[in-house]
Length: 160
Image (cartoon, rainbow, N blue to C red; front, side, top):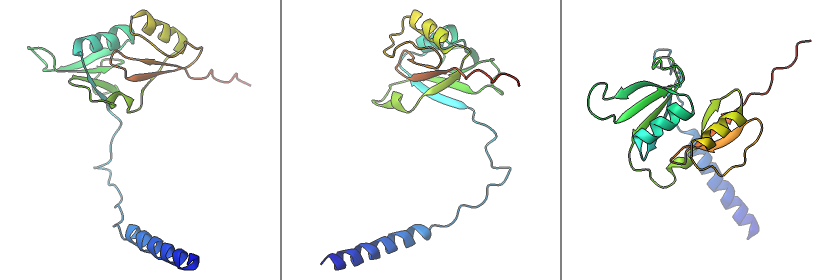
């Protein structure tokens, strides 16, 4: 009985692995198709103006662009650290309903000179934080609960 079960399991495994191997190979990616760089991350927020103020006034982002570009209320903000929409890695804020679990996609990572000082700034902005303040890298949340890692790079090694 055990021998028959082992043989059946081996046969099923062989069929499944053969099916997986039968997938056509992915062709090499030509240069005119390759991604140039990561442009950014889009976040759906519950209050566009509140989130734009948090990212610009608290975290130091600059508005690189808004949609629509002229007239009418903004529907979307493209934020970067320099304000250059072509060179920055952008955080794109769009107002809308945040589906349950949407803020747990991962995290936005910012490189900062002092994780503790930036975390203190976030706390002073009035956005409630649940993680303890630490020296070095800190984890905070924006007004909608998106996780932001304030990454403090280790000090460079001393020259020899």
